[in-house]
Length: 51
Image 1: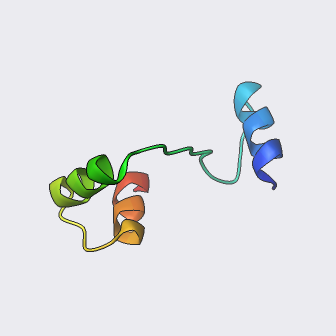
Image 2: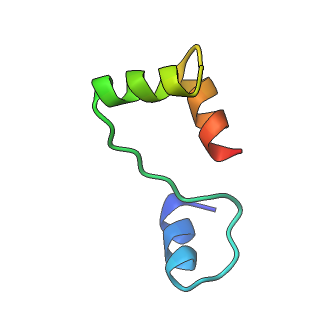
């Protein structure tokens, strides 16, 4: 499923293969979020947020 298809299906409230996510955090906010979630890197942060 492409990102475009995922968003279209989300807007129509249809099932999708995974969540459509768009994150626009500044480096400072990302660092604080990683610290708050106790994550070593961005990938670990995304996994913590997704699960």
